[in-house]
Length: 307
Figure 1 (cartoon, rainbow, N blue to C red):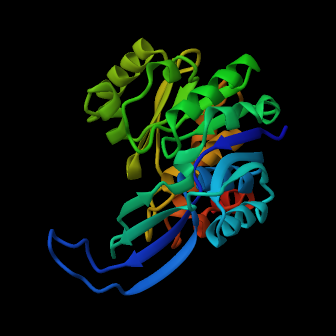
Figure 2: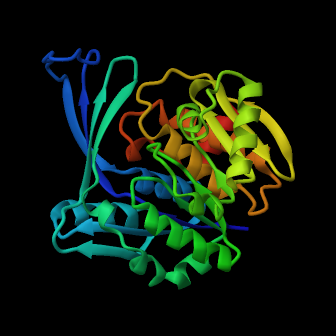
């Protein structure tokens, strides 16, 4: 059965600058290459879900500019329903500037633009789209007020909510109470709980803290090591990452979340199997350059599993 996934999130045009190494404070470096592509955490997650087989819809906002039209067309090219994307007449489309070094590590600067103009009323206006979903995903590149409105509606319609708290920020406690699954990386989890992630015991402690804050299910991604999960009904564990040579880690986490949502059952009963699929998809993403261009399809993930 095909999962129905709706993403409330950011739409950014990514400009990637390839450099030998990260600059020191006050230092000027020359770039080896410059490229632009569709991106944004929300867009990347939606594309990952769609390419992995989910029927995907997007709720977001772009500027009345060429970048905005480019972003909408980019989503349509992957079969994503863009009817709930609104055009802002006064603020431009979001953008991101990515510094990528020779080791495949990156530093990212984001201009929110129209992403930060999404209003709760614009979310409630597409309640019918939210109600159709099995999963509703969002991140923190759009306003938390919009997230709360979306998640509140989702819970009213029995939709499973997934929060990717990135970039890490102080969370409105009301959002956590309508979040079914929170998916931070180890740094974000530590920022939100105050408990540093160093081993399984500290991850267990993070899970306890999130439950105290209202979220019963947790997945912590730990980069090249793998992903920890702790669920209310189906226990906890750690799924190792696949060992590959990383070329560009941009969108690895977004691919993970989108791919996960395409395979996960709404009750999370197949969480470990879905995590293996998501890890494999993410491992393919880091072997390519650019965010959206490197996100794999379902068939590519399946082919990699057979090798």
